[in-house]
Length: 160
Image (tube, rainbow, N blue to C red; front, side, top):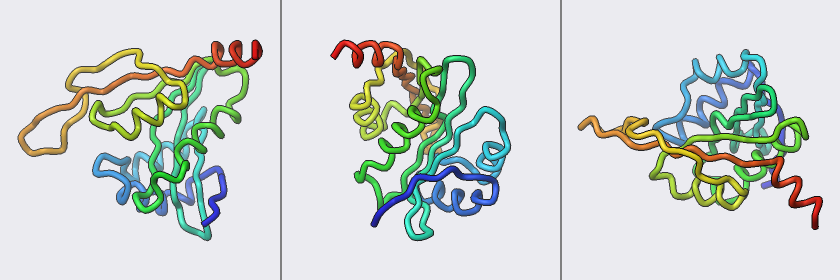
C-alpha cells in the first residue's frame, strides 16, 4: 500500500477523529482536531492511501521554533516509517528558519522514544506526573521533553 503525503483541513476532521480513536486511548478529540484545523501557525500533515487515513501530525511554529503537538499512526500501519516520514516532511516544509523542534511524550512510550532518538532528538526535560495514566486509581505518568537542534544538525551536515 503506497501512502501519499497531504495537508489536512477542517473537512478531514471526522476521518482523523476515527484515526485518533483507533490509534490511542489518549488521542485528540474531534473538538481538538477541529480547533487545530482552524488555528493559525499550524502545519497539518497526513499520510493517506486509497482514501484510508493512515497517520497524521500537527506542528505549531513561531519565530525559529516548532513543536510537534501530536502524531498518530493507525495500529495496522505502525512500523512502516509513516511517523518518521511525517516528521521529516514537516522539517523540510518548515524550512531553514526553524532551528529547533520540541515535543513531549509519555515516559512509557518506548516506541516513540526510539523513533525520536533515531531522528536526533535529545532529552531536555521532564514534567513529573504530567499525564493521567488512564487507570481509575488516579496514577499519573511523567512527560519527557525532547528537542531536535536543527541549527546544529545543519552545521554538521555542511562539514561533511
